[in-house]
Length: 156
Image (spheres, rainbow, N blue to C red):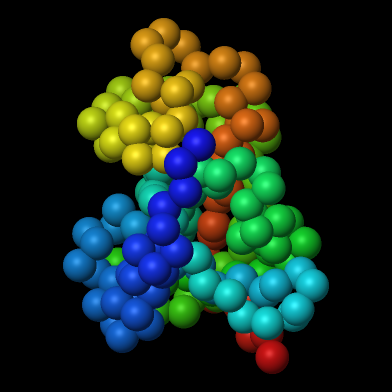
């Protein structure tokens, strides 16, 4: 698996915090989460795999060991930047593997070139192979649904 250089991965954060996240046309989101050890606010920019009415589904492209993924499992209260929304309170939840597989299958049908680009960029062979995804794809590449929760209390 290939790692995106840190400066490149972090570059969109300034765009989102400046209020220009709409330039990504909903393809990317920024999630503010709390470090499980430090308690400090952290930011990550992620690709949207599915957009729903009040939620987005994102992939942990580096697997279950990704720091942001481990942080949102520990504290699912997050803030979301998506399109013109800035810092909207939200809650993160991991999709169960069968649902994750369905979302990946739909993403491949609806956005095949984006799925291939993600697979090539991060060197994830399972995203490039034809045929059905393996049953455990949601374990190796976890999906997270981030749902807006306007009544969620603000973290301090």
